[in-house]
Image 1 (spheres, rainbow, N blue to C red):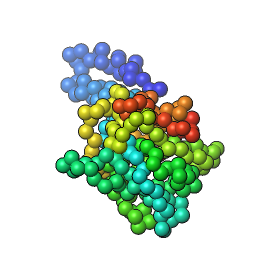
Image 2 (cartoon, one colour; image 1 turned 45 degrees about the vertical axis):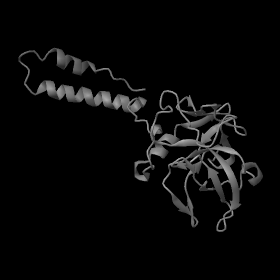
Image 3 (tube, one colour; image 1 turned 135 degrees about the vertical axis):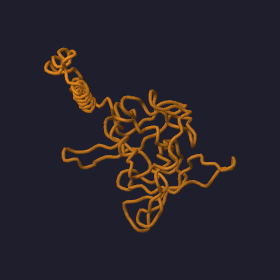
Image 4 (cartoon, one colour; image 1 turned 30 degrees about the vertical axis):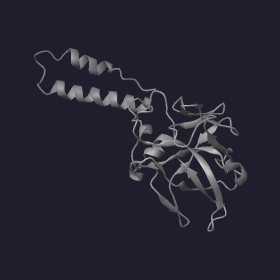
Length: 225
């Protein structure tokens, strides 16, 4: 791990400046020390900005599942995220997921899931997808995905229930309206997602709805995507 301590040579320079030091020496030393401190923080990750507050992660209910007409590996799901307009419930969102090989249709349909609800809508083989289901995955030694499992909220969770992370977000946190792809807020957050003992975490803080912890029933240890 990096250290923010000032090196002996720099310490000596600072102590021996006195009145005879050139006027610019103090500024130069300060700049060097600041650069060393920044490098130390970069090494231990302490200056890394958290982007998790930008993500709108919610509970969804998969109302229906159909085969994608243009891709055998994709499902088209209608997912209720509790969206409302003027207090009137909106239609479920269309979400396209590559889960055909890993999750049976009968298991997925009617299931409570965890969704990133503010992904920028994008076409997947001609069908616009309006969100992303979060899943845990296991990989082999070559990095190939061999197993995928849904992240599922605690029993009693409802469509639209917010997922929070203690120490990072709470019920009052307002996410971005839409995740800007070029800023990579999702990608920068996702690298810190993982499952341990069946519980989903972000940087050691569990995924949690008002009803309890988010879990994966089929994968005990793995990454989340």
